[in-house]
Image (tube, rainbow, N blue to C red):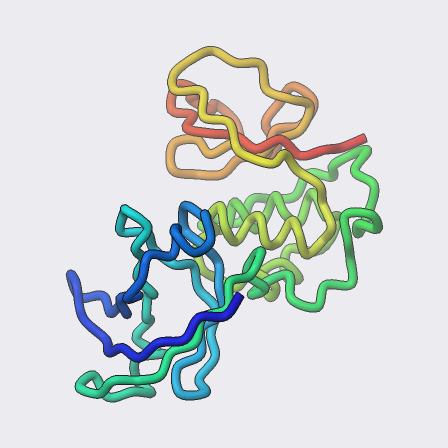
Length: 211
């Protein structure tokens, strides 16, 4: 579905946004941060809409995007809702039916400082770390970029992460764990490439489906 309207930019805590002038939930029934393609005067980019509650949303505008426009003007804006963003997995040669490989073993790689997420994606995909750095970029990994990288390589995973909230849980055979502000790979009863993990600081984990 495509929506069109005219609006301008505004700042909130040094970040730029565009306010959507209608209740998107009433039109679509969708909730949460919604992925979309945005066109402003023929300038196309992708983002996730930020919910402000009660069905109303903001379009986040990066400094790079903002540099193409005049803050004082109104612009014609077009929004197309999409299933997911394509920043990393765009034009992937792999699918969930035909992944990069069957994960029946994991070769341990050295964890590159600051790139723990990139490192375990390389282990799961069975590729060199440099390839993953090119794919994901050299910024710190987030859940969204990790999911996009898994999608790119056709690696299957659970539909949602589990948040134990302090409860003791048994981890699945393979999963990505967010623990103490870092991502860690768990495989066959042990963490890969790290030692002395304080599991009381575990926040969430996402199961990876393996052989």
